[in-house]
Amino acid sequence: MIDWGEKLEEKIRMLPDSPGCYLMKDAEGTIIYVGKAVNLKNRVRSYFRDTAHTPKVAAMISHIDDFEILLCETNLEALILECNLIKLHRPYYNILLKDDKHYPYLKVNMKDPFPRLELTRKQEKDGARYFGPYIGASAVKQVIEAVRGVFPIRTCRQALPAKSPKRPCVNYDIHKCLAPCAGKCTEEAYHGMMNGVIHFLEGDYRPVADQLKKEMEEAAAAMRYERAAQIRDKMKDVQGLMERQIALRTDGSEQDLIAISQDGLDAMIQVLYVRGGRMIGGDHFLLAREGGEEPGDVIAGFLTQYYEEAALIPRNILCQILPEGMEGQLESWLREKKGSAVSLRIPRRGEKHDLVLLAVKNAEDALKKRNARRTIQEERTVGAAEELGRILGMDRFPRRIEGYDISNTQGQQSVASMVVFIDGVPAKKEYRRFRIKTVEGANDFASMKEVLGRRYAHALREKEEGMTDGKFTDLPDLILIDGGPQQVRFALDAFRELSLSPPTIFGLAEKEEEIWLPEAEEPIRLDHHTPELQLVQRIRNEAHRFGIIHHRVLRAKAFTHSQLEDIPGIGPARRKALLKAFGSLKALREAPVEDIAAVKGMTRQTAEAVKNGLAPKPQS
Image (tube, rainbow, N blue to C red):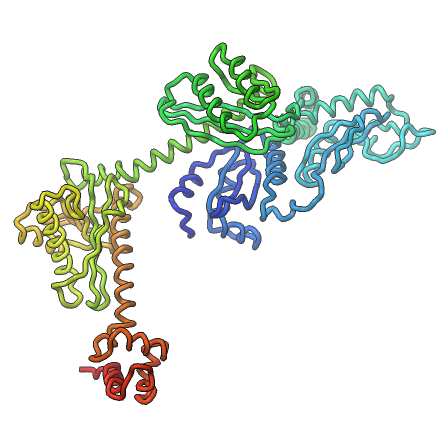
């Protein structure tokens, strides 16, 4: 499974059960994909799980470094917002939508005697009504089917009114058309029905739902239960497909929507951007220590700071709330900043009020996520350290925890690492490395004793010299040893030899992840999902990582140079010349003496010394 990192995993965990759009970003912050979802939690999580993906989606996932979401009230809003975001950002992996075609609309021209629902990709100033845009023709067809399920509109392309009545088609017989071609309805009756279609497409489906409910009740009363069930399903389709189109039903001008969410400590401001009647995105801003202030005062203070430096002040700004009497003052200030008319309003009802409520919803979601991240961070750091101290029987909070690890290869290039966590967080400036000096071979127990002895000897020396900020002055409250009870006993020996009282010391036995305290007969076993064990594991893994990096550097240096350095008469200049001439120790080892002697600066005698020095040693 891919490790997406703590930050991204937390964002994935906090995804809401809400319609909306998601924007996938690469490591440079570029938006590479925009999608919509009925349920953001289910849809976005599917990208980050080990499931089968198409080649295109798999390629996109390999470039994801972060993502953002925008919440919507309805599924249709999410669809429309997706369209607007794709047109704005033109993401690389939205391949099928990156052509030069216009997005489809539904057109109704009420100037016609018997109007139809027409699919078009171009809006014209012809007096017709346009609804959309929709993502792809399939979405348009879905809406048309929903409309036709309720309204008996004609689908034929005949020029009407006809010169003479025609025989109606089967749609008339199944009550799917009023048959204007056969003179079965007047223009007035047809237009009355089409007015209902227009209200329906605008999102006002209540009259239709009421009519369907009446028909369902009548069918049920007549014991036509199958028909009643069909009407019930049709009602669900109507409500699911034709939700109110808040993102479209604006006045077409530039608008910023500003709302706030507070938790008693901090505040989150959400700004949503509407341009040309289309919602195109949003930003949220955390205002620390503003959670207990009056929300109107907070928004007013934010508004002046935000638009003081803004490149664009829109024609209309809709706010959730403002201090009483300040609306006019702020509007005058905005007009002066913009140099033209600006309208600042607090909508109380209607469509614009619904837009502001959408901004409120996004502000609440952003603050909820931020607080959850902070809570989780505290649980994994300070909280985990406090709980670990309690489990180990400490009488105080372990502010500074040091972790130690030994790294070597069959006793060669043995090194030790010391990592430091303060308040449960890595303090990398405090990390230290040690070359093992007094221990021969692979003896991790004695090596650990040496390292702790040297670490505390340095601290005592700095204390004697009156230093307060030396490299070893700050002593640990808790020490973690990578290993079991025997490693812990050797660690304690270092303190006995220095006549020092040790801090709390414990070992972590890797095989079963058991915690061993000095003199304990049984280990402490923690649930693997607890923050305290995860903190211990992070410290142990960090000590191992830090030590192994240093060990690898020493091992590589030893492999490349040590054999030549041990040969008498071969100094830095000759080593460099030999490696440049032969490329590697292996090639040099296999070369004849004559070729070695031919290298600039070499003699026959030094060439023979190199040959002998690089010869394989006989096995004892």
